[in-house]
Length: 151
Image (cartoon, rainbow, N blue to C red):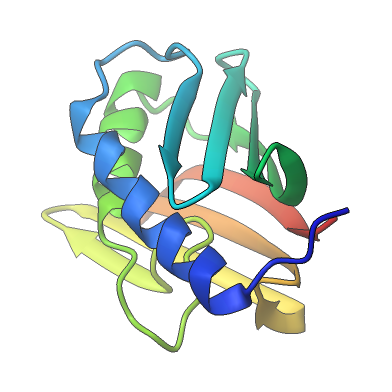
């Protein structure tokens, strides 16, 4: 297993987010691949409702980090509207205090709100567990359980 510099992994994860602005409006998009500085990320979405999302980062072809998410749409919200908002969220993972896992702790755009509650293991890139919530006009629209870390 390859050892990985966490600062370089963090920087790579942040730079790989820029491709989200190029995605189309398919609920189950094609797998996403992005490579830079010896790192490669492969992301896949399985299913529309519920949604299973998996992201694996490789360093020189060795798997070094992963994220897995299982989410559900709630209260009859339109899945495509949630997908479009979540794409915005993923583009705004910036603060240095918060690891680039599934967006910032909180992001607000018009009537939409995103909350990332990382807990249990203090939300570090090596190991994390948490819940992603999307709220629209005060109603829960999406909830996803996430976990991951270093291989």
